Image 1 (tube, rainbow, N blue to C red):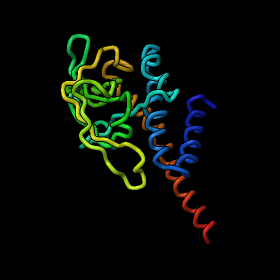
Image 2: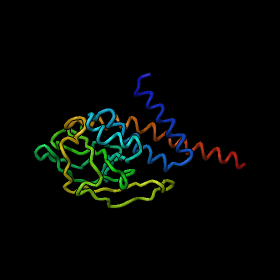
Image 3: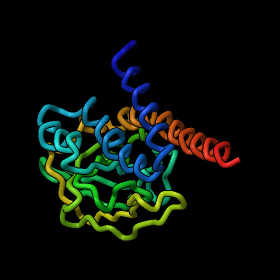
Length: 208
């Protein structure tokens, strides 16, 4: 079995088992240890991994994936957050909504449009952004049914400066990273729902 497939199998097992005990804990764990970390592990440089990945995997720091927007959910090609080139660096403006760990994460793995003149597959780039960056604001934290132990936030970026070395995977090459991430995320989320359902079923059997 290929390494990526084996990792995916392990991820679904962990997602189901943790969700059976605490869906909120699993949601927070998945967002940091997988949704944020996997794209960096597969597409990041050695510098990215040293600066932004190792501490998250060890549990010293928290990560979050910033993809969803007010008008772009499962259709990732519809994101509107823009990253404008300024010399070697970038200036980001936009909003991200329903971001798990968004208000408590140390780092965000964030997607933005870098060339609006092109189709989405050739227009989006990926960045790692410290959450305490100037101009990055937490607008709201949501209380989700059954998930109140996890931070889910609405973020706004106003002229957030991002160093050029924080670009991951190359300029305008972020869409393939999105597709890879979603292929990893969806089975894990489904496994988590199985864990919740299994736990509920087992509890009812025990009661009756």
